Image (tube, rainbow, N blue to C red; front, side, top):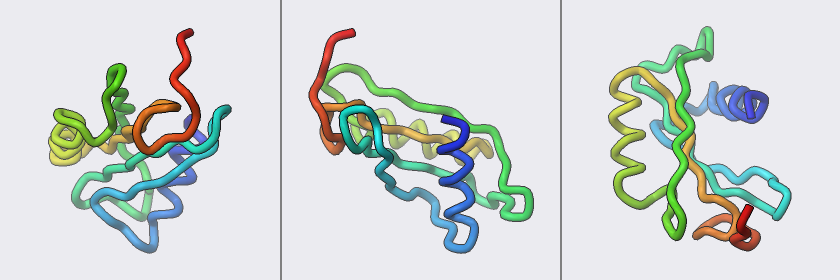
Length: 98
């Protein structure tokens, strides 16, 4: 996961946006995710704290309170990644019990 985060941050260096949607490959297909960076993200060092936000069953990365949490983290200088688990909303695959 650290590699994915690093690649996503590097991809944003020349075209910073407050929040950007991505899709990464998982075992069941594409996982939809949103990377939110804090205001004033330092493109010289491209580093800051990062939190991974995970929703509950039958939920989504875009349902309350996830976007609000991401925004508040960004205001505190913390980046976040939130994603839809496989089989949920924008991600491919099927819901599977563990």
